[in-house]
Image (cartoon, rainbow, N blue to C red):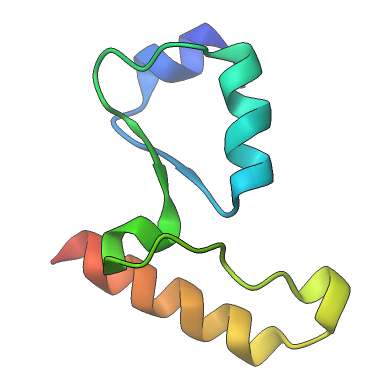
Length: 73
């Protein structure tokens, strides 16, 4: 992630709060409101399930599907 990425993209979507914290180290400000947690589009402020730890790819897929559909709506 770089400042040029911020300028180049309309939205920057983080999968979890840890990603968001790391991103804010590089980009402490978000003047255009481009940075979002994926699940925030669903009205739920939680992380996308991480299959790295659980092995549960279906739950991750469902989270991403729900988040993407809500973002597009």
